[in-house]
Image 1 (cartoon, helix red, strand yellow):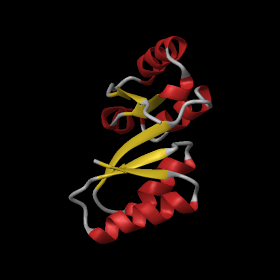
Image 2 (cartoon, one colour; image 1 turned 45 degrees about the vertical axis):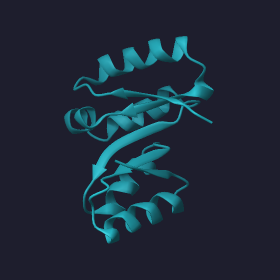
Image 3 (cartoon, one colour; image 1 turned 120 degrees about the vertical axis):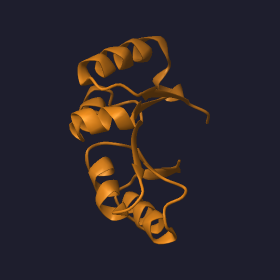
Amino acid sequence: MRRLQVALDLTDLSRALSIASRVAEECDPKLLMLEAGTPLIKAEGIRAVRRLAEEFREIPIVADMKTADAGEVEAKLAIGNGASYTTVLAVASDETIARVVDAAHRMGGKVIGD
């Protein structure tokens, strides 16, 4: 099934939550994904992922971690805080990619190559 992925590439969590609420009101949750963008995660921390997951339980959350190393640690942070998906850089080492995929799958999450 195809989904619309809405990238919340902001630096303010309140604004991101407001935009996500408006999008969620207008779109069928079955056709939507909300992305905690890299700027949002850097500015607000992993709590941004957690808040999106808490507020929008019916919508998959993408944690745009852009993991380059420390794959297992970052995947656990993302999935452990409610993300359905985490991202890993396609240019990361094979070992890093494998660790992200393994950790995410063990926790019931999925991985997107970026």
